[in-house]
Length: 83
Image (cartoon, one colour):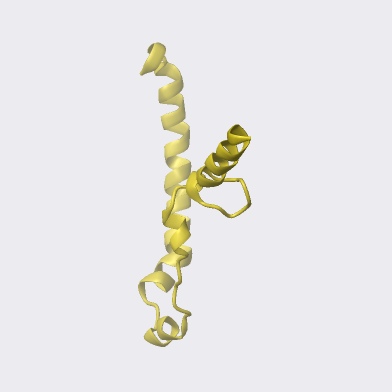
């Protein structure tokens, strides 16, 4: 524990653990059986997932808005410095 914060750590563990366990049990009871036993018709009728390839690109390299990414910024700085 950082800075000898043993008492806050014990208090947090003692109060949060039962609450998290109760919430986990609630979710398991409420949604667990539906997720474990999804009918094949439901799975077949669901739309296919499509992931935009731009999501695999770092945000700084995406050019969603003009001059909001590194390549655009480099072009702009180069253009200004040449004039």
